[in-house]
Length: 68
Image (cartoon, rainbow, N blue to C red):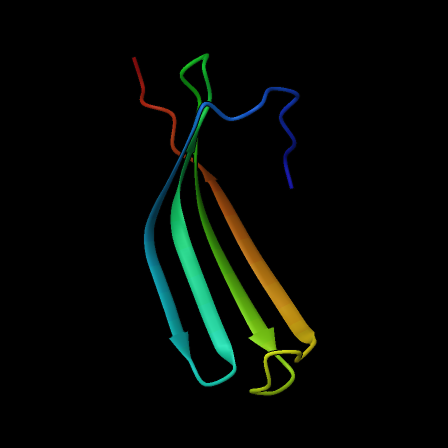
């Protein structure tokens, strides 16, 4: 996963979805220098309890910086 030494200047969450033990979120991370990364996170829990452990996480990052 690419890392950025810069702190994000804005986080936009477009969607959060839950169903059973699965949940997901997507959106865009913006940086002060104009770079943007679109993201999608999927989290799968081991059960339905509030204290259920995380079974798996899938993360997708895509460069979404506007082309000048």
